[in-house]
Length: 76
Image 1 (cartoon, rainbow, N blue to C red):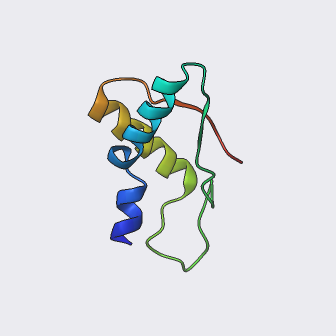
Image 2: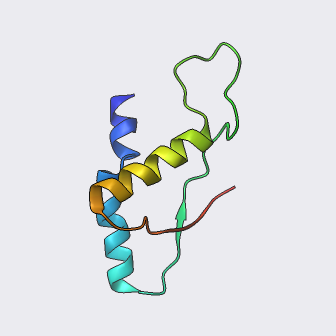
């Protein structure tokens, strides 16, 4: 779970988004398509619903880098 959390963090995401934008300023960066957007399954403790995860990711990114997150849209 720890490896997955690191790969889903703003620190992991930042160099890739910057690389894409530096190569193509008009690039659109699609965010993840998190499962369980509004709720998680009953009895499946320890998981964050997609809406909360996305809100936390954007908040952490903008706090860490002091800029608007580069996501153009999220997958569905």
